[in-house]
Length: 131
Image 1: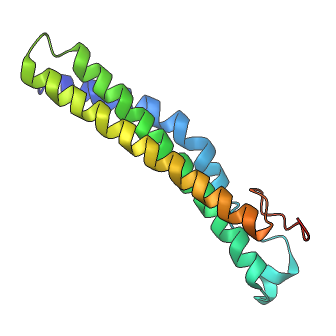
Image 2: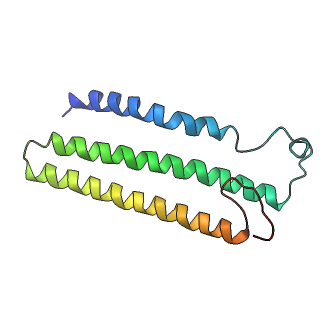
Image 3: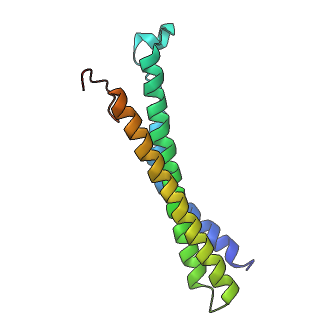
């Protein structure tokens, strides 16, 4: 098992970095520093809602990526279990936990979208009055 640890770390690193790079690039744009409000600190409630929307998009993307990685890890554990019942059980538990985590992420996404739509705000943070 010790010999496989560097291989698993290398594979997971090679998978995590490409999945996380788009989200990390978005992390720089959470706060819009191109407006004069950024310079003066003159923010209102709409700016805070937009900040929360952007942060939730990034967090949901990262957590979804982590759930995908756990599916991959559980599948690899299942493949290398070589028929051992305790390793198969461990792999099944990992896959079940990843599925539950993914259900939680999707439910969070639906709740956030529902609340935003009820407030008249699109997922991009654009307020549309009278909708």
